[in-house]
Length: 482
Image 1 (cartoon, rainbow, N blue to C red):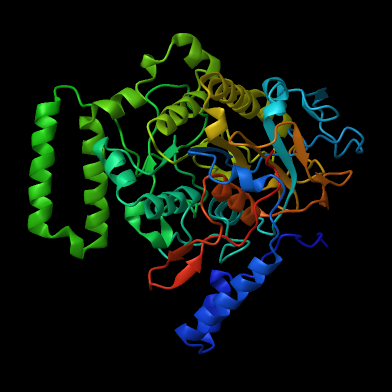
Image 2 (cartoon, rainbow, N blue to C red):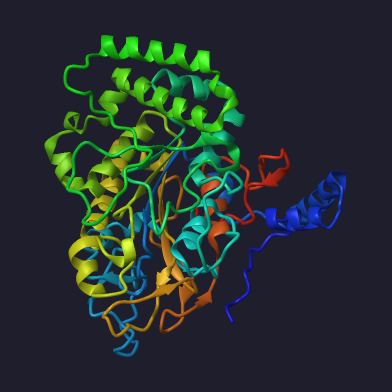
């Protein structure tokens, strides 16, 4: 049995609200129950050390997501004293945090831990990729813990969509006007969508609607991950040869006239297609967008420091997007489709050590360190939150195929910037990396920490497709702030 969660709130989850609704409770009764739960939480919630001064310190957030399930034991939570069937073949190396060690294949991150808070005690109980990713991308328990389900507009929105919605509520139309003027979205994902037997859940605007779906954009350059990375829904920022901006502007005007004559507002599918076309054309016509995505405008040394891989070039693009005013950018550091565990991703069931050291860890290590160095040198680290996430860890015991299998019982993530206390190691797993031993936390707490840093109350209200009010987060900010 896993340790109980010390920060579990008394707020009602969306699943509980729907269950009460099915039992025949009125809307007013539901709201009374919600108010009572919120009041109880308010009474119990003493300020966490360091969080008050850090509230709203981040102007933007960059999330690096290790799609496939990163092995904590082979990266951030090494277990050199475990038995040979559990410990990694990778040697531990010292970091800039006294007494804390990481894998030998993370030499650059080892030199960055003085800027990072490593969290080694995250856990949940969703063992499938899509359910685990949903929980970590939305902060909410998935409706199907062990299997897959069709992505739906009843799903919770991804973090970027929720942050975008909250920021619009905070700043009115100013943010939307600034972004729209440049053809930008309030949330962007790079470089691919995530798939596993279908498009993974929790990547879009969910019940907030398609107008809150993040843009999905692939950098123009960078060595791709080996494997399959579907491009459906991506925006291509390259102008077709022979198509100049004048012709493109005329085409945009014609499409607007056609959409008006069809009244696309009455058809959700047509509305989504029209929105996608309009976004793409706006971005192609925007000189600022073109500059943002033109990595050749960066010094060659900077691009090379991030790594000439799609991971590094995506992380560099994410930095430029936050500089342009996008509140949250997510980089999926993996091939897009897990494709039965074939390809360059973190789903290392077989030949795990070779895949990690040759394909996955080096670009992730390099891009992460370059991002922190860049943000620090420009003075933007203090106002930019960087978060490293994954859907779950890997089994402590190495399987007969030389890999590790899905393991949500405990895994590691990290935070940096925007007042995060550097050199901090929060929580720990047991001797074998099998379960949290101290300070257990869950995905909801990770999201509460992100919201807090961005100046968003963890109990701000969202409204689902039926207009029901839902609390955006069920967690509490972790005490990671200086």
